[in-house]
Amino acid sequence: MPNTPCHIIVEGNPAIIYASRNGTPAKVLPTLNRFLDKFWQERDTSGESIDTPECLVAQIVVRFGFELCEDDYSNLRVGLNYRPEVKYLYRISADRTVQVWTPESAYQTNPSLGLTACRLLQQNAIATL
Image 1: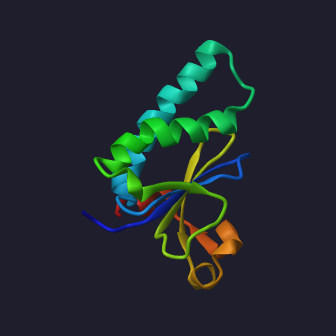
Image 2: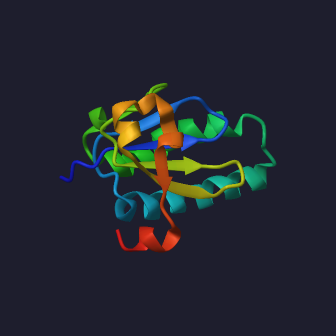
Image 3: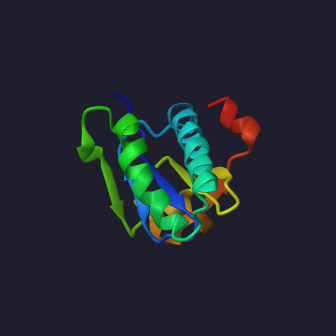
């Protein structure tokens, strides 16, 4: 099983989701995008907009976690700190877009810098990963 740790970050929520493996864009993005399509449809249908960041983090952990973790849920965690070993950071914005970031050396030295010490991957670069 590939050891590619990642974070999932939801704008408006201080929680940081950490998965210790299966964090490559090829693995995460298809599953995350399918999940988000359904999540946004449900929110639009129900007319709910209150607590969206909180609801999104909870549902990612529950619903998305099953696919990301496979049969080992010990690799999925939620906290408030960035971890230095992550290879990718996925940021879900309030405008419903997903951005993929990669840590630079400053992040690995001081992960509390968060996305400010990461580089945004362009969409065409993600397709080749």
